[in-house]
Image (cartoon, rainbow, N blue to C red; front, side, top):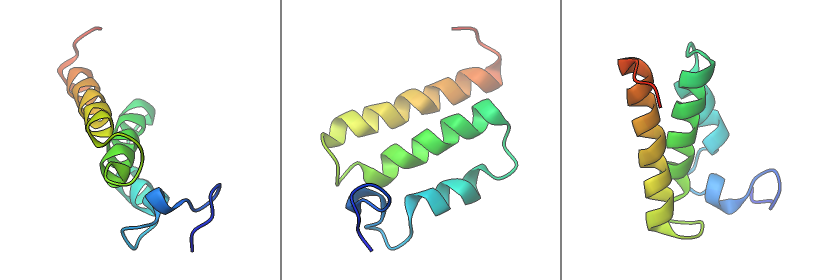
Length: 76
């Protein structure tokens, strides 16, 4: 079901709602870790369907780098 506000195509087109996948993948994560994981998934999920593909992949990479720094204890 596609609907622009609650079920936009770029978050449902893979057969499973992106929000459902994010919820499963962040279960048990702390706030910041869950935030980064959720954004990584979001940008990887939607990159071929919304806006600039390279920009979404770069955003996913930025959140991945943030998560790595978090676990390494690096300050930014």
